[in-house]
Length: 159
Length: 105
Image 1: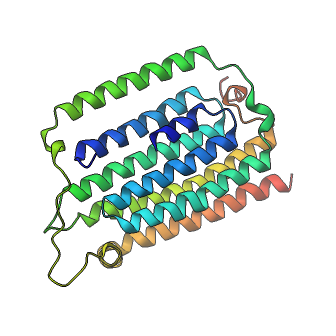
Image 2: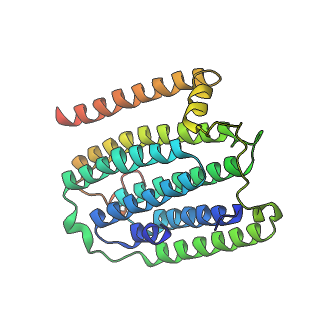
């Protein structure tokens, strides 16, 4: 998964980059499922590798970006990126090395006798009781995004 | 893997890859993909902590709902961002950020 994440950055061709991103997201979804978050794993695959990546590929095809593959990299940007990456990895290793709780292995789930763990049911219950206001806000946000996208593309089309 | 540190390490490395990509690459679409990578890395951290911080023997569902909302917002953000990129491309005929200097003065 991390390998394909690197592939996103390294690949010159945007289509190959996008496909690497798909594989990386599928790996991430499998990690979610390994953490017993089945609902989120499925949502990750549906939303990211389904909707978002189709959108990315569609835009890449629409703009026809093949010819942009060759261009010299900015040396300062590469150096800065490498320095920041090294600093982040160093900080990460230091913090994780001094985090004793991080050694915990996966604790077993406690479910009542004769029942199985249903995270979708639990999440849905919580979503429509305690978080119902948030759901409405998100709905409004999605509506706003839809209207905004239509407005953005319409203005350009009428030019 | 299987320990909390393992998941956090993967998440941190994924975030680092995304950040490096944003800094190094000059293609705005790839920068956008790297942003998605960073968002997903943060999601992995949330899910890992929700699974390891059990509440009454069950994962902390509030953390997982935060991930759900994040994914929703990220999807909306991708749609709007790509629309902006298309509009930009129509105006400037480029997706390279170094060619976009009209705000630089």
